[in-house]
Image 1 (cartoon, rainbow, N blue to C red):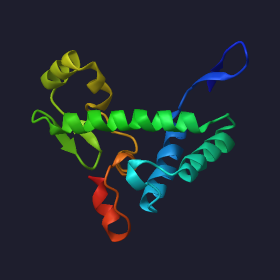
Image 2 (image 1 turned 30 degrees about the horizontal axis):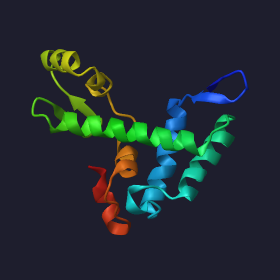
Image 3 (image 1 turned 60 degrees about the vertical axis):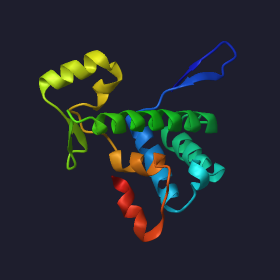
Image 4 (image 1 turned 90 degrees about the vertical axis):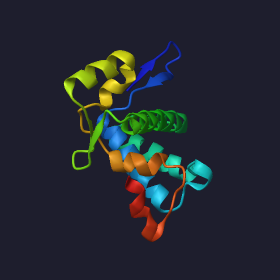
Length: 148
């Protein structure tokens, strides 16, 4: 999963779709439990992800990889929110997909290449992503309203 340098230590960690699913599943659950005070996860939550990824996928995961991937997911969520805020795009809540016609797609991708992975494609684990990166976490009966 990671490329090795001359010393044998991993310098790059590759997240697969199944790994990301486990990552988001665990952190969404931790967020719902209230283990995300002040917009950051507690170390115990990060370590749960490290242990689960390492054990399940037989790789050497580290807390820094989880924290780096969390930043990546936050950036992806910001892009999604920005696109959804633009009037030329629609949203299919059943498919968790940003929708647009071909001309809008072509113009958007030409202007913003980073939009391409999110247009007219179902966004994997959208609800979990929303829970994980949301800044104002609620728990209990209000947690279900955070999935927007």
